[in-house]
Amino acid sequence: MVLKMDGVKNIVKERLQLHGIKPSLQRMAVMEYLMTHRTHPTADMIFTALYPSMPTLSKATVYNTLNLLVERGVVRMITIEEKNARFDACMDPHIHFRCRDCGSILDVNVEAHWVPAMPDGVTVDMSETYCIG
Amino acid sequence: MVLKMDGVKNIVKERLQLHGIKPSLQRMAVMEYLMTHRTHPTADMIFTALYPSMPTLSKATVYNTLNLLVERGVVRMITIEEKNARFDACMDPHIHFRCRDCGSILDVNVEAHWVPAMPDGVTVDMSETYCIG
DNA sequence: AAACAAAAATAGAATGGTTCTAAAAATGGA
DNA sequence: TCCATTTTTAGAACCATTCTATTTTTGTTT
Image (cartoon, helix red, strand yellow):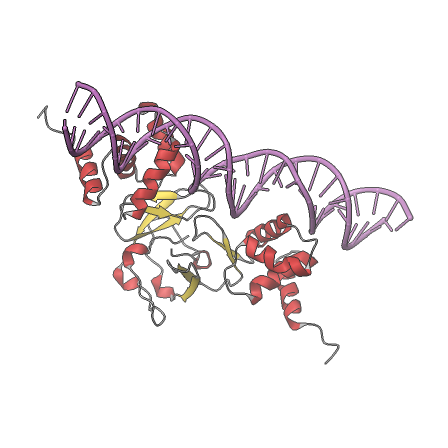
């Protein structure tokens, strides 16, 4: 048991490799942060949290990594705020509400029967619907 | 009939006054643009459209006006994009989809029975739910 | 009308999140 | 080890938005 590899890091690594992303230290750290903190953090929050234990980390790397993760469909960018993009590693269909007072973002599960009737010629990928502001 | 006041301008003026906003030339122009162009424009699009016929118009005025209109609940800010805020003078309950290819934003009407069951202690003002990205 | 106060508009500087650039470091194969 | 490729990095650049200080407009009082 002492020799067993860290379970969380293993899951993180697998999730990246599954999407063709080479699991560098930095990418693992960003992905692990997102998977273990369901707070919809900004890029800056992630950087600030990781920096103490990764003093060579650059903000550009955090942005590069997040953009790569979004491109590959591993995390979602949430544009519920005017200023900052927020990120979410949970890809299950759900929507977000933001508290007008404290600014925190709330996950709300949705049922499939909520999908609206779309106009002619429009189809919606449920995994892409993610934000109600 | 020749002497009749412009109907659109009248409606615009009334809508502003109804919310306690003094209808200056600039505010009327921004509001009229939003009411006659259902394209969810950015602040810059509005400025660029108005500038030729209002050469002293300042971008700050467009931003000031839009912020005032949002504060007073006359228009909505749509944060469906990472970079630019978009604005909508239609306050009827509806949601927005954005085309991944051309970036245009689509209005979709919603039915009241879509409102999700909220967690304990949370209530939702339907007029505030406006964005599905 | 003149004078004054309050509100609104303006130009341009400042801000701040994100992207870009060019160089350094790490990785992996021959 | 040598070399090519990928990744990371620091800091500059970018650009939407806000701020600041000034000017203009509006409305009111003599």
